[in-house]
Length: 137
Image (cartoon, rainbow, N blue to C red; front, side, top):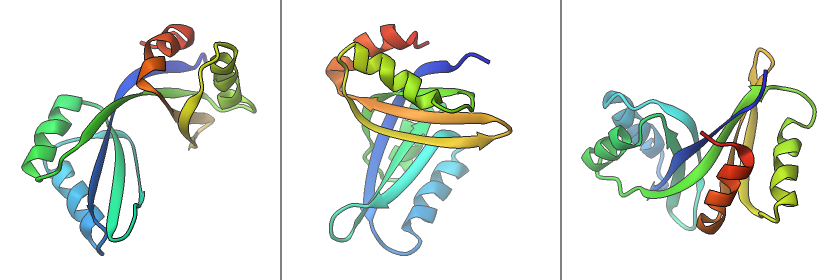
């Protein structure tokens, strides 16, 4: 199967790095019916934690985040998915490199059943050019 590339809304939220805070935040979003394409979190500085979130529906996420007293920061990313094979992500990065586009970050995982998913972050200035090169929907 051919890889699918979608331009997606990416949000970052910060909150106190205390036991249970991640569960509280994600629980509030779950209770509001928000579903995610991708989520990952990490500590950030002293006493803070951060979640990176790619919701299926950005406006539903923003409304739920507001209710949960979160202040999301929005940016754009590209979501890749397709058949897992050696070099699946390398092929995409090669296309970007050949176009002189530098990536800011990358997250990729095997989705099981022979599938993979990845999120590529670029500078805002590179987004339009990358979308054209990757054939993003």
